[in-house]
Structures are given as C-alpha cells and as structure tokens.
Length: 560
Image (cartoon, rainbow, N blue to C red; front, side, top):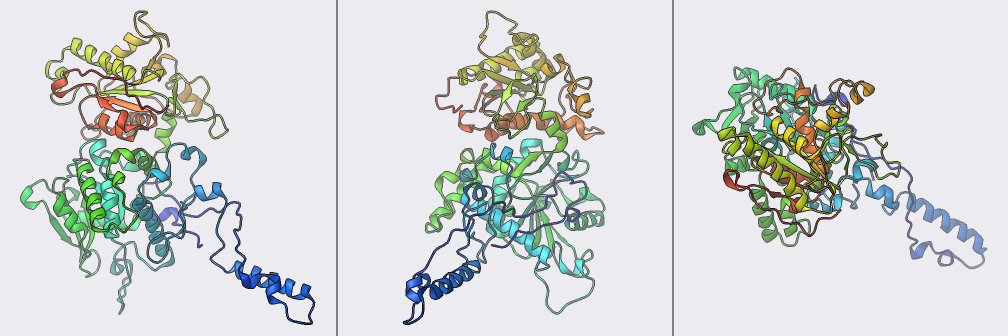
C-alpha cells in the first residue's frame, strides 16, 4: 500500500488557507494479518538426514521474507481501517474498503462513510490518486504549454476540471442554490473523470474559504495554478463578468485559451445553471479542459435519473444501488464528509453547540447558553421575507408573529420527545417575537405554554453576555457574535465590507446539519437545512403555498 499524495499548501488557491489540506495516509499502529501457505509448513521442507530445526528455521525465514514483500500485508486494526481510505489500483478501485485520509474522532461523530454511495467513495479515492500523480509529475494542474515554455514531442497528460462556480456576472443565488447540487456534480465528475472544484469569486461576496473548508474525504479547493490561469482568461475577456451571460442565445460560450497557454487549444465553457443537458454534454466531452456552472434545481431529479440509468445499463456493477438515488438517504453524511466550517465560523459555533460524547473527544463548553446537543434538538427555520410570503406582501406584524409561533410549535409537535428547539429566521423581528414569547432569561415566559421544551435563538447569547464583551473577548475573537436586532444578510444580494457579516448564515446552516430534524417555511435555505440534518425524512414544511399554515403531525421514526 503506497502513501497518498501530499499536496503542499502553497499549491492551493490564494485566500484558501482554510481549505488547502495536505493529503496523506496515516497508518498509526498496525497489525499484520498473515497467511501461512502449505510450502511454508516446516515439515514440508524436511529432507532426509538433516535436522528438522534447520529446515524449520529456514522455512520461518522464507515465510517472513515473502510476507514482507507480499500484498497479504494489510492493516487489520479495526480502528485504523475505519479511519482511512486506501489508494486506488490501476483501474480506479480500492485494494480494500478503507477510507485515504485520517478522519478525526470528533468528525466521525458527524457522518458514517457506510451511508455514502460506493461510487462516490471510489471517486474520492480516484481524486486522491490524481493528486498523488501531480506530486510525482505524472499529471499537470494546467495545460502543459502553460506550465512549460518549451515544446515537447509528447504532450504530458493533464487533469480536466468540473467547477461549481460563482464569480462576477454569474447567476449564483443564495447558499442553497450554490451548494445543494454538489452530489450531482460529484456523480458527473465520477462519470467523466474530472476533478470537481468549487469556486466563489472575491466579490460573490467573498471566496468560499471564508466560510467553508473541505471535509476529510476530498479537497475541492481550486489549486493556485488553475485559479491564476482562469483569472487571466477572464481578464482577457475584458473583465470577469464577460465570461458569463444570462442571454439564452449565448448560454453556452467556449473560450479558446490559446493566448493564455502558448498556442494550445483548450476550451473552457460555462452554463448558468438552467441548461442541464448541454452542461452534461460538455462535461462528457474530453476535448473541453474546464466545464463550469451549476444546477439551481438542486440536482435531485437529475441525480435520481442518472443513478437509475446506470443501474439499468450496468446491473453487474455493485457500486450502484437504488437507494443511492435519493438525496435523503446519504446527504447528511456526504455533506459533513465534504464540508467543514471555516475557523472563524467554527469559533462562533462553539458558543451554540457542544459536540461532545464526554469521552474526551472534544472539550466541554462551560455554561453553554444555548443548550444544543448533537442530534438531540429540532430546528424551526422561517424565511418571512421570501417573495410571496404574507408578511413580505403586507408587512403585517401579527401575521409574522403568528407564523413564527406556529413554526416553533410545529417543531415541538414533530418530535415531542426532543426537548430543545432552535429558531432561525431571515427577519430579526420574528426572532425577537419568539424570544419574547417562549423565553425570558432561559425560562418559559408564558406559563400556559408547553414547559417541556426549551426554545433558543442567537438572542440568548446576547442575553447572557456571550457577545463581544463576554465569551468572544475571552477567546480573543471580536467577530464571534451575530449582531442583535439586525436582519441577516442574503448571500447573493448584500454588499458588506467584511466576511464576518455573513458568518451567521453558515452558523445556521451547520446548526441545522447538527440537528435531528428541521421544519421550514418558504425558500430553499430551510429545505437545504432539512436535507443536511441527521434525519431529512423527518423534516417538513410548516406552511403551504402563500404562507398558509400547515398542521404538523409527530414523526414516529425520529432517532434520538
């Protein structure tokens, strides 16, 4: 078994310090599983007249040497096996079903690799193998003529890319629009042997590394040489915005990059997220070096259809299973295997949740003001200002209060056995109403209401002094608070000078992913939050179209 590639930090994109990871296999303690073949039995080597011990010692020596160079030497320690991925063989399959990157114990609490479709795990192994070849000089990040000024008689092999992109001029949407379809893009990258990357431009609103970093199984950070070449190409197109267009007549646009790469003819195409068939056709074209775009439907339907098609066309391949065609069966695990909060977002999260099994895996947070335990609380998400919502149409505060209260009560009814509800909203007034209605200094304010549930929001942090003058100052992190009584910004529309203003979006996203179940109103963010939760099938909308309140029945299969 060969160690996986170690890609040095400076090879990854500038500004992605949270995302650039070295890829390496950590073996730890190993146990050797041996198999003694018949020719290694001591009696089978004895010749007449010679003492048995000579042949016994010789047999032991031969067996030891053969095992040292034999592929039978495998890691047999269950803890180590569960924490690694082996390197791919020549055909892209693994030598055994171990993970290629060590997974920290705390991270293992968040996902189970056995729930992730096998073909995705195979892709992660192939991905790591490609990085190893780059390290060895067998592959190149960028077209060879751009990496080397001299011409060669034989063109070296190069990587091809699929990039989920949001830069100036692109139709990006919010957090859900940008990220939700990533399982579909993993599937397409697997089918086309492309390296999947994720890129947000400097002004959309900031590079993705400000908010997210890669998870333990694969690195989606854009390597620095690739980013540099893409940005140079955009500048040659009279500005980054001109690379893209929402004009349907010009939806597909090929960019011949011969000027940037010294005469080589490598194409780059972009789709704005509404023409999936054209996008897929380009992805499967080996002559196109970079394919960029997204799918704003979330990709679930396309993903389902492609997996079913693969099963029907290749029933003999065991890596495809019908249950893998449903996002809800694996999305939580895949999300945490692929994404982690950036350091700054994680600092905020420590004020909300204690990811701790009390086995020494994580430090216990003292006096957590928000009593959230991993996979042991509900989330109610209410997007009051979504187009078509009654509050946005009328600005009637009574409607806002009624819907916010119903959202919390829906979460309570959906899982009566869970004693904690976290409330999140795009409207500060709704959060204040819930705070006033259900809590006052950590106690139930209304004696008539259900006292078996604690209802929390970020306002509880403010109440207990965990803002800039409290816990944040103790950590030395002045950004570790969400502003009181200010509507959260929208990732696609707000223009802020500092990325810290958007941290609250990703705090809420990860709090939903740590929860057992999410109930939600209109918009894609709450639905996305339900999908990344531990039990997506428990999630449900608490309103129908046009904000009509919907009754919430208990979900009988919630696992606590």
